Length: 146
Image (cartoon, rainbow, N blue to C red; front, side, top):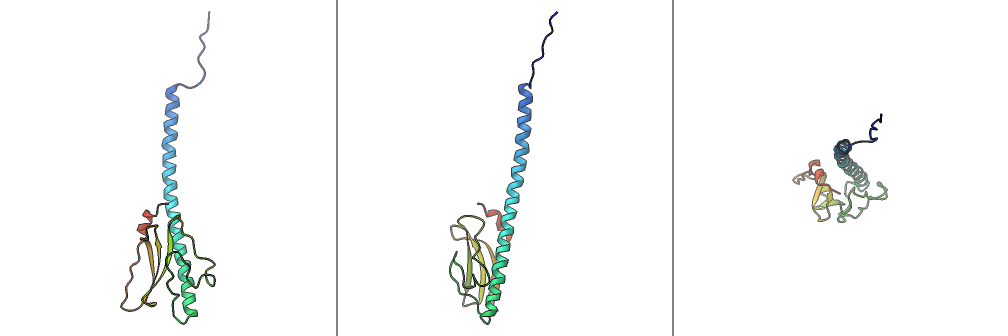
């Protein structure tokens, strides 16, 4: 009597189920990675803003309360090199940090600008009485797509 041999290997359905499960798990992992990247960019911008703020305040103390002049988006203000080793590079290509000294030192702020020049995030450092500056919140970090 002949024995019927069972084929070795997996059926097409089994392979398709495994591939579908792997695809589902990988999409979950990629979504988590994108969220982690966005949080890392936000943390980096916050750290850059803090470093720029501290350097600017030290420089202002040296200048007797005067703030470094405005130099335009992407350019390093006078205190870079003395209190800040180098002007930070934003986490996304095409974005720039902008040191802003408005109204002769009465309104001081740092901005992260996109390639079109629009403010994505802004931190107000100093405002003289009668001047106002509104921080652009970290909620805008979601628009920080690289």
